[in-house]
Image (cartoon, rainbow, N blue to C red; front, side, top):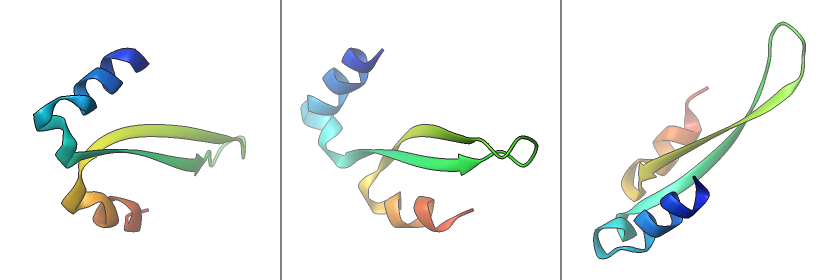
Length: 51
């Protein structure tokens, strides 16, 4: 799956997107998990500021 995302991001139209990885803590177990999302470059700060 990583190859598909990388190939998409390298195309001419994919340069306007960034892959964002956020660490979240589970309220039940307290364990940390990582969520990956591809967002437009203009929305990166907005995405990271949300909790």
